[in-house]
Image 1 (cartoon, rainbow, N blue to C red):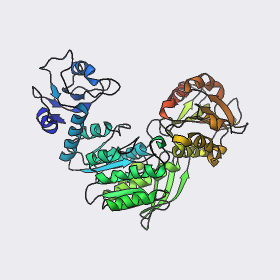
Image 2 (cartoon, rainbow, N blue to C red; image 1 turned 90 degrees about the horizontal axis):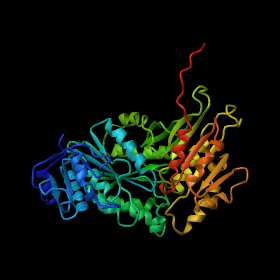
Image 3 (tube, rainbow, N blue to C red; image 1 turned 135 degrees about the vertical axis):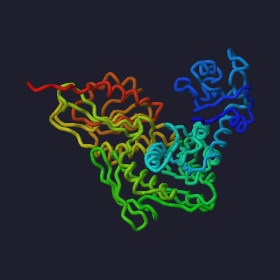
Length: 478
């Protein structure tokens, strides 16, 4: 199915092309490029123009460039513009203009991607839904997501992130959502902001892009909720609040079980019962916000709650799996919670709560008692209070319920230094240094959490634990 033809792309970007072409997708990476894609030669760590010839050889329909690259003929299917990123933005705006469905934008210090994936699951049950891939939420991720949006999409969910002041509003104005959701405001990216109130102001700027008559969905439980509400009012939006203090969607309780969370809430005065297929109070709150978005869209809440029960966390964001340590004796397992993608104090507290509530198995390993074990890596971009914020994890009730805490990185040494002797594991400079210790540190019956900022590479630990596993064999009884 055609996504862009040369005529529409030229009209959108003001660029030039020498021949007619039709693209069925948009790609910025030759490693994932599909035949028929329009290849966008962005300049980031490497210049995408260096890969245009390869993209065309792999079957790209055309390439968006700002000059004819070396090794590419002038007669090649090129869309030449003054600036490639600006050209991609133009495609994004044009795609948004021709789409007649409903658009949702999601931001927040924690839970953006998980909530976006929940909405994708729920809205896909009610129509053709397009959404951001992975965490494509920045200055190139948002226009890329929009440029990939099919014209006949009935719903679109656009994730919007930030690292510095002034980033969210321009992206929101490009996406022009009918509903914008702020999941939460927390201590993240404090290096670029004076305090959490500055972060709230930036998150609230997403409402500047909402279409007239649109809806702002916001968390009512925050110390900064008043900032979000004031911004929604200033933008002349109707607001829907959710949370324990929510007026429209009121959280009452969450029962965390082995692999599910059962939530009781109120939608106005009506009882609302739903579940997610993952344990965690934070997932429950994100889901409540997502359901508030569904209501704002006037979509079917009953269908949405049914779809929500099938949702599972994205890789690295709380995904839970069972690792079989013996191919024959299927009792010998440990549970792995992969939350390695990112970390800040709020998301760390939520992950530790999940680990503290996780059931262990006793009397099946060399250590008779199953243990709750955490590998915790540095939380980055926390500003001048970073040492205190790491040390402060020691006072969380959930952390105090764990059996062993291993710490990774110079900032996590602040936590390691004040852990009780009985709970203190090993401190490692890097995740790589921890790998040789894993087989000794872990045993059947344990539940293991890996969490830290992405640059700490806790994913190495996750992958190493997965490799400890064996596929269970079918053993016939003799």
